Length: 356
Image 1 (tube, one colour):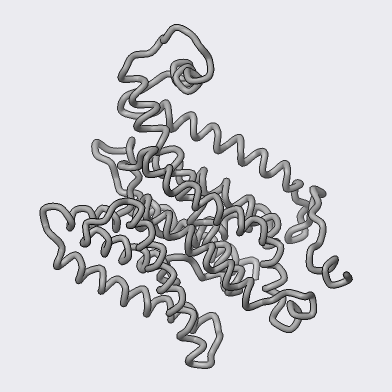
Image 2 (cartoon, one colour; image 1 turned 180 degrees about the vertical axis):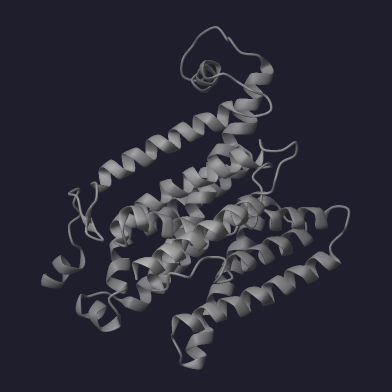
């Protein structure tokens, strides 16, 4: 009974102190982030090459629940319901999935440099998706192949340090670089043998990252899996704190370290694979958003995990808005996240060095 009480500490909404500064309660932070996400979602629905005013947007969104005379055109309805609303949902899901999996990987491996990209998960999932494209499979089968590819990649990456009997952070990162490079080469080979008229273009689309082709039919298959995996990670967020204590301390608190690590890794890999199946390879989100969120709420995973979902969703909505509005053609999301994410991460490293 004592171990159970210790291993599952009660959560609190009281303010905490981070770096000597008093922080707001978690509930207040989540509400504030939720308001920002809602505002960005509305902006994403209204803003674009085909502008729709906010009153018409709300009228279209509520038309299925409130009976009334239509005040919008057919084009207005199609733009909001069939084009932009699926993109907003996809931006939320993809951003939240990548950042949540990144924060979970960083917690379970006790390494702030770990992310779905560095561990090679994104490359492995992309290889699985590319293989399904070469075999002319449907969307559901593509998601399965992406998941299996990501899971195999994580297994190989984690196994290399064990075979070397070295468990340092540097070895883990180097293992991810090796496996990611190998998967990237396999992907290049697949592109070489792909049909240049059909398959090659689709595989290249996966690599650049985009949610332009996402629709509600695709989300119907993917979203439930992502919600289940995300709910599992959110439910286990306090376990990440115990895992970070080390193997002996975790066992003393009644935690089956190996089993719970495996559960977290599988759930995070499912999220990454689903994100890749929806939007292709989008880098930096799983690395920088957890770091940015830690500067807001601290390193406690009980506060970090819920907050990182909303911060990442807001970030991805901003990126998608920029991708389809700053030029005459749509910029791939993976390009923009790299252009934005790399300077932000460099700034965080400089600030961290000054603090140290």
